Image (tube, rainbow, N blue to C red):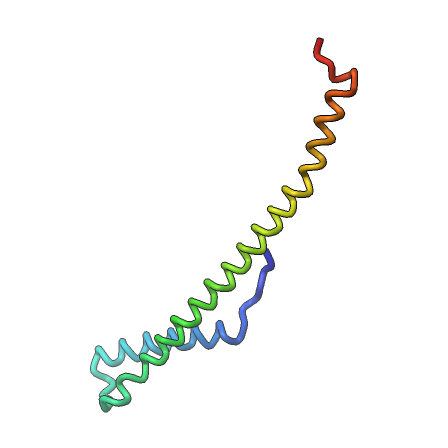
Amino acid sequence: MVKRGATIWDYIAWASLIGVSLWLILKLLGFINTPAWLEYSPLAGVVYIAGWAMHKLDRASEDINHINRDVRDLRNEMKPINENITKIKTECPIFDSK
């Protein structure tokens, strides 16, 4: 698996999450009184965070598919080796268990 560092989008997503949480706390405490149209703007942050989470899951899915492909290739490459070992065991007198 390829280790990836945090991207600018990760930082934006965390800032959005913190901003929405802070706004919600201040709103519940009564420090923020906003008009109705502005009250729904944090939903945009929630939608962004949901998209970010889906993107992260998609990247993880790609990594898992890559690993599965590598394992399948490795199994296919090992089949001739296993066949050769079986052939050596049957033809070599050292491996006779008489």
